[in-house]
Length: 94
Image 1 (tube, one colour):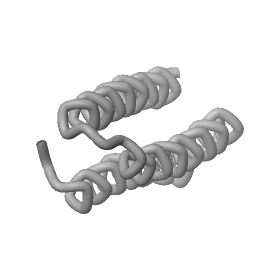
Image 2: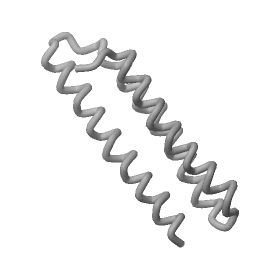
Image 3: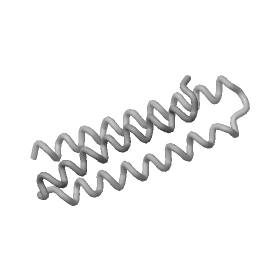
């Protein structure tokens, strides 16, 4: 399991990569601006939620439970972020 600090950095990097792609799309083609804005807002909101949940691991006493909790968060975050990249891909193809 990665350190909590590194996990937070990776969440930030993935989030900012998606936001950067959204901004590039918004700058180049101004046609789907509402969809892109909504996608950025959802991404930022999810990042904040995940970081709060990562910080919530301190309430769990057992190492195995912490590990399962963090792994679950990571899996959920990656799936949702992948879905958002797919949404952006669909917006770009229109």
